[in-house]
Image (cartoon, rainbow, N blue to C red):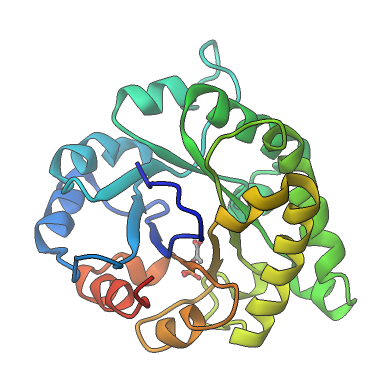
Length: 255
Ligand code: PEP
């Protein structure tokens, strides 16, 4: 479990998307050996559901394992879905919610994301709520409006709770495209999110890690993680190779 602190922890997380079989997960974790020690970042990976158990059983104790998505119901006739209690029973401690691929390819709405966030919190999975604007929304000057609308929907169920959660700012135009937001773009968006969380959650907002995601690679990770209000990164493609993911984790600042 990623441990809550009085300042946001630096967190480096890998989203394996629809890659990494159970055997691949075991092989990856055998080879994955970033620098550890006091002040080093918290690290998590999000395997596909079919590889969750293999990852849980092969992971070192410092590595958090999560699902990429959950259903808001605890059980029932929802073919193809995974619930928070099932994820917990398989050993997950975390889950992504509202990843842009879920929103844009599978039609997830803000209210779906809010229900998933509420389910995660209710059952004791730590949610990483993903928000981010499309390129058209950025060009229309709507970044703050869009990410605050997405955040507000999730905050409704988080405001009254003492629970731990993370945010990931992932501009849709930067995911899997090789286009990265500048550190300044990331800081601006993260500050907007932090400010709204302070209004809604008070001092608790200062403990929430806000990760940047979108074409993070070993070569740009250090600069992004050094930016103000960037408390780590959520990495897709570059988290699939243990050597590249180790370089990203090792690029995180001590905190
Ligand atoms: C992601 O899937 O969350 C992501 C940021 O992907 P990539 O790093 O490949 O852009």
